[in-house]
Length: 349
Image (cartoon, rainbow, N blue to C red; front, side, top):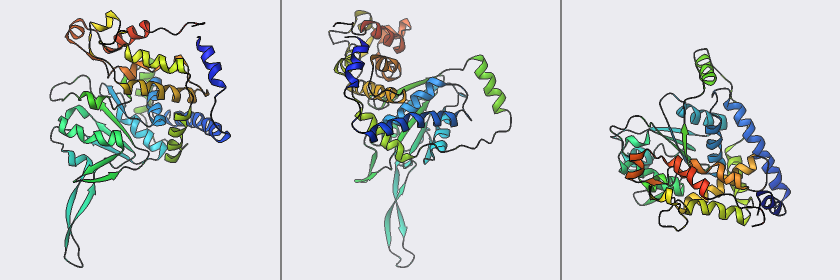
């Protein structure tokens, strides 16, 4: 079956109501307005921004990896300013404790009665957008303090559960250069990030614009194009987007082909992979494809939507073995091989 045939089949399904269609238009327009505001501060990095916005519209979390000075922190902070969401930055260090993130119970004395009681003091996790800066600089015990928040949007402290305000996102950053004094993130935590976003040095002209604009006086006025309530509505809308069965199977085929024990795993991938991608990879391929379709003005998901986001979704979920590391085979190379091995369904199939 061709990609066009799948799209025509999906068009008959469409979104359920005129309200949904209007919200889809609002989401597309909102994305364009956010981009316009970000351009007042951020130069270039189109693909990075696109993946960050997809994270917002799906309701996931993302890991951003790049060398110092590439505006990782500035990008996330600027987005929180544009959306006027509560922003919290946590600088991860070796001495950071879990309670420094989640909060803790404190003893407080009532000035009128003199009685003492335990009062919960919320930590920086209680925000809409949490920036976990250099997350790999703190031990796994402290890293794990984010697990429940990222997955369930709540934290449990001293047996009591506290819900986090929606919308809620965690954006974590890593510096790929400095490895001394760092603690690699456990696979269970990596799997909870929708995207592994890589920021590279910009092209010459963009870097020139960065230097020019950041060395002059800057005081941009940022307008708020959409609200937190809009983001929550967009997240619900994304899940309503229809996906034709061949497209969903294509996403699953790509993920299953990454697993060495699966019969569909290509031989030139199998020899370099210790563990393949999890079920979450297929889920995020579909959800990310839905968000990409909506923000492109379409109400159905294409094969191209799935394949376009395969690298940021799979690169942190494929664990390479010693042979790959010794031969310089990266997970991006492996994703390229997977996309070659799992071709688009042909017309008439």
